[in-house]
Image 1 (spheres, helix red, strand yellow):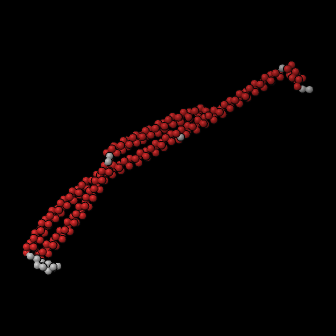
Image 2: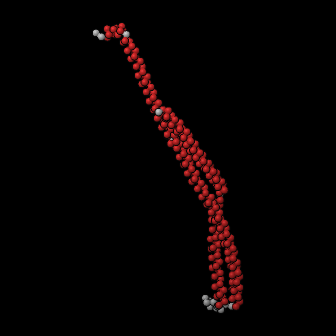
Image 3: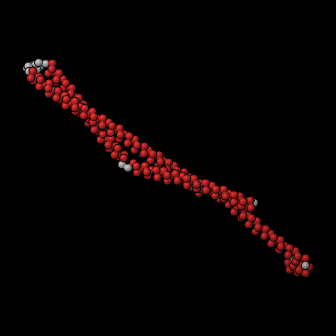
Length: 239
């Protein structure tokens, strides 16, 4: 039984070593993947730099500029509307409705002339605002794309960190398995072998004790066959 158990342990050791190699290879593979992901994250972080802060600041300034242009455009449109109403008033009226004084042709001509100058200036200002607004819109589109790129980089880094965490947990599981479950059968088998060996030692000691007692008894029997010795023992121990 001891020989059978020793052979069983030998087989388990071979299997255990194979399992250990398998788990070590898994650990090495997972660690290699972690190293690759960490290297990728380092490159992504380097490429990210201060792009996030820069793009957000640029977009903030552009949107503020856009709002300012919208307000300026609204102001110009209001002025143009007021100017149109004023020009129409002088074109349609000969007398001031407030003071009831006659509007002279010279005064009317001067007012309409000034209205045309002001209208030209406001139209030029409106066109300038439109051009600036288009430039701002184009710039916002460019920086929006940059923000998307930055978000994608941050998302990649986050996903890589999640994978790294999962791989590290896997490595911990493999290491715990190596430390316990892989060698569990071997430990049990060796414990059983030690029990068998202990039993064999006890049996051997008992066998030696019996053999010694048997030899002692044989000597006594031979001694008792000697009549002189037998007579002497009887006289000594019997009354």
